[in-house]
Image (cartoon, rainbow, N blue to C red):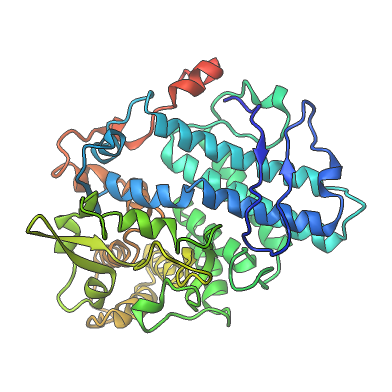
Length: 452
């Protein structure tokens, strides 16, 4: 993996008005020059630019869209982008350019987070509170990117500095080491950040945002008591509540949202909305909702009408994702932001953790909160077995979190259900389909990555 890229935080307006973002240029030595973070205004601009970089790379949109294709949420319908068919068929090859872009952009963002941590550490020009805030947000971002990397590739290099000489020939790290770094980063960020969002709205992460990701990480690592502890923190926070109206969950003023992304320009609402609704009002049908997902809805589920829309193409009926209802023409005030974490996730994480611990009544209580909003009959306590309770959790996660940040694909993988679920609808699916190949360009740049 070659790290001699120049990472420039975009000079477009994002979270902070009247400030251009700071360029963080990789040096030939281990540390970024402290002059980049010469004062608190410059640092604030750099932090905002980190999120602009995440948005402009379309990483969250990629995780949502390709995750939906790889799982059983979306069906691709166009031959114009062959690489999307490869994601859908889970037969990616190392020469797919988009796979290299996904890898490269992730590591560029990790570089930015590392540079920020190095730039603020021991910086006499900054207050302790400002340093802690910036470091906590950088740790969070690094952990988030590694969470997606380790769920995409079986092995990835673990880059924790900006030292080019160290990074350029790093081998693949042990998976356990990557998970340990994710946990360490998030635990430290959780201690550093406050419960206040350091921005208008929820456009920059706070302690509860870190807790949401950390709860998901511990769900993957099967630390059930810690999942419950972290979920409790977020669920009990007074600044979040479930939106009763399903059409309000993904708007800019959503009370359910824990962390949102705002477009860096004023011509669109969200990139993910454009991607998922890419055929409206165009004359082609890029992708649509798979029949397997539609068949999994219970009768009377309000989410079917609120979050999936009917669409006619060449005289035939299709269904499209409709959580995000807008894309272009945002004007000066977008009506939708990209939701990265929301409260419903924490109820589902907590429900699974309770079920895994045999606390079935508590799991049912959390499930009923989600089911009640969806207009579904409430589950009766003391009726479901442990296996049936877990199945009910996964069913709710299947519907509630569809088309969001790769949840379905990641959950199938972590629960070992990929072959059971995808085998019948994707006959070519094999164990090797679980992981992306390391991009060929990365192998050429760093021979240590050739061993996968």
